[in-house]
Structure formats: C-alpha cells, structure tokens
Amino acid sequence: MTSSAHALGDVLAAASGSGDGFTPPGIGEFFPKVLWSPSILGIEFEITRITLLLWIATFAVVAFLIATVRNPQIVPGKMQFLGESGYSFVRDGIARDVVGPKGLPFAPFLAALFFFILANNLMAIIPFAQISPMSKFAFPLVLALICWAVYIAVGIKNQGLWPYFRDIMFLPGVPKPMYVLITPLELLQNFVVRPFTLAIRLFANLFAGHMLLVTFSLGAVYLLQVGNFSAVFGPISALMAIAMTFFELLVIFLQAYVFTMLMGTYLNGSVEAAH
Image: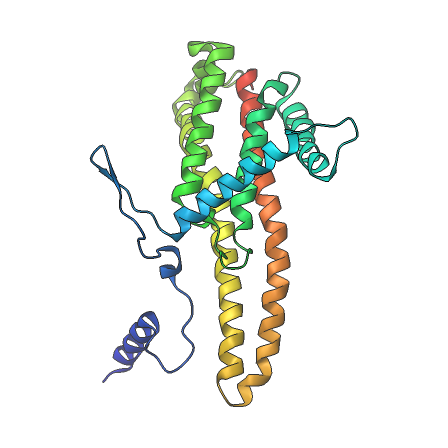
C-alpha cells in the first residue's frame, strides 16, 4: 500500500472513531442526531439537541427578564439590579452612545438582541450542554438577516426610499466617473458584506471555542488513560481545558457585545444619512 493510501486509511479511521490512537473531534459535533421530525404545513423540521439548547436559552432569558421586573422596588434586589444593570449597559453604551440621540427607542431591541446572544453563547460552557447554538452558522445568519432587515427599514423610514439608497450609491464629493467602481462596492458592502460578516464573526468565534474546549478535554482523558509516559501530559491538557473555559467566557460576553454594538453602528447610519 502506498504512503498516500496509508494516510487516507488513517483519516478514515479517525473519522469513524475506529483508530487505535486519539480521535480528534470533527464536524459531527455540530450535526447531532435528530430527536424529532415534525411536519408543519407540509414543511419538515428536524429537532436536535442544539435546537433544544436554543429553546432552553430563549426560555431562560425570557424568565430572567420577567423575574427582574415582576416586583420592582425602589431599592432593587439582586435580580432586579442585575437586569437593570444589563439593560442600562446596552441603553447607555450602545443605544445612546453608538446609535446617537435618536437611539433610545432602539434600546429594547438591542437589549433583547444582547441578552439572547449571551444566553445562547453561555451554553458553550454550561455542563451537559457544552455547545452554543451560535456555533452553527444558520442561527447567527438568521439573526444577521433580521438585523439587516431592521436597519434597512429604519433607514427608509427616516430618510425616505430614494434619499436612503442615493446616499449609499452616490457618495458626495466623488467624481462621477468613479461611481462606476464605487457604487457596486457600496451596494455590496451595505447589502451583502454587512450581514455576512455580522454572522460569520459570531459563528467563527463560537465554533473555534467549542473545538478547542473539546480537543483539550478529550485530550486530557486520552492521555490519562493511554497507559504510558504520555499520561504525564494529561494534567497539562486538563489545565488547558480549564484555562480555555475562562477564555471562552470572555469571548462569550465579548461576541454578544460586538454583535450588538455593530448593529448599533448600522442603525446610526440608518437614522441619519452617514454621508
């Protein structure tokens, strides 16, 4: 058998989990088995463990927000203080400072976006969940498309249909012959690149974080059970898994903030002409 055939055999063995050595995690982590396949109005749906985690995160954030306002007090309790602090963080730091003077009406939407992403991101480090729905590209993409539709609708409402698209397509001060180059780039940036990069940034960070955590965790178990000198490296891999968990916690909060903050910058250009 040639060396390339041997390499192919090793790859297939690792993919099937039938090799004698360490089998690294693969993309199968993000495609769990279907638990339920309902059909609604002739449309087939597939409910997996990741779908259930999305539902749990959504229920948890709704329950948390209801609990914070259920019995409001002048001197807030711990739950009320936590909810008010989170909302104030988004309202003052994004709706007011990023969107601008007209941004306060968007504070509830931005806060809901922040808490929803944060709750789903936290699933990446919660025991027995240990994967964020945002690590599947479909979920961040749907969020990005919702944001895309909102900032376009806000732009048309506040500036008018033609002025909104005119300011995007025809930048002031640009020589007219340059519009042949600039206009397609502006349209591509505003209507294709923005939603795609908004989705891919959130997806890629949660995807990479999950793979790192799983790799170090499985590596620690394998090294401790392998039964030779490699076992001394097991604790190192376990410590790396713990360290990466804390790092992932930082990423979880940061990515929820970045996604919401970027949406705030898009709304800023929609509320008033950016050019």
